[in-house]
View 1 (cartoon, rainbow, N blue to C red):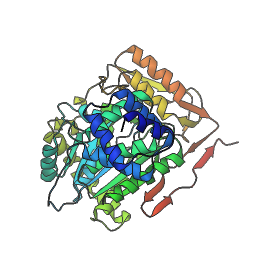
View 2 (view 1 turned 90 degrees about the vertical axis):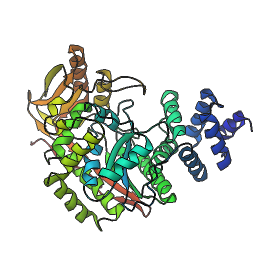
View 3 (view 1 turned 45 degrees about the horizontal axis):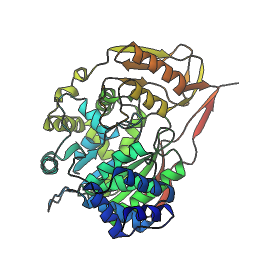
Length: 451
């Protein structure tokens, strides 16, 4: 069939068959379909969506377009975690070594920063010498040897997704639930997993701001995982404010190291333990989330998780000395303390504004090939609901020059709002499984200034 006719059918609300989706992706990867025509088809999907059978076919075709990890008859259970992206989200840096200490193998394939959101691969590459470009067979060997590998998507794994993702970024077709779900799940299903835990971000700093859409995305990905025999659980979590205090690649590595010593911020610990407990239960090494949490806490307290992180760094060519001396990480050339402009309660810390500022300061990218400065970013010590005094230090700006400081100050002026009352929304709002959706928190507590 002429490709233009497939575009028109999708544009008009029709569906493509399984064979047609397989042919489309094979032809696109082979260069037989030009990018402008694929962009048109993607836009039709944005407007018309995908029927369940189409979504399954698209995911399967992406998965089949490249290589997969293959652990053969190895009996150790394998579980990964994926976040849909946010600001200050360094959970993977703590979670991967932590879960690997508890008898579960973690082949963790991650992405780079794009737009206002950070990427785990860029954070890891701020460690001197750390290599994320691992080939599939290399990943398999390392996971079997030390229980964990943290690596970037290679040209070999889901190449159709890799090409389509880059095209979506420049064609205004990123924010589509079926396209997001197929992209994420095709990569994760290529890891030969027994289970997958998803962190679906919701709020102004996420790609999916609305809670109803975040729940739809979570349900969609859970269904795709279960269809492939991969036990899949999703938590819907807040991304209206940055996670933790540090925002920026090297700064987040340093905060992750603190978390591995039980000295990190409370919200980072809460989310790490919640996701980790789901991973241990999904792997079958613990029967319930309460026992799993205690096991994770013991791995932190004993120093095992910190030692495992150092082992992963060394295995992938990085300098394990960062664990004892974070000063070997890239350091910003200019640092400025930011003070509260007035007395009151913090009403908001806008995660998107912070993420966009990091990009403007050189710490993120608009295109996949853009270089980044790993040293720049923010450390923000307040959350919505906190009371502050006028002139109180509430953030630090890390930049490469005075222009970066100026950008950082302007961003904090816009991002942090102070007023008479403040509310800290729940961090984890819903748990989604193949059994349905469980609401974990129905409302947030509010505080206000005394009369």
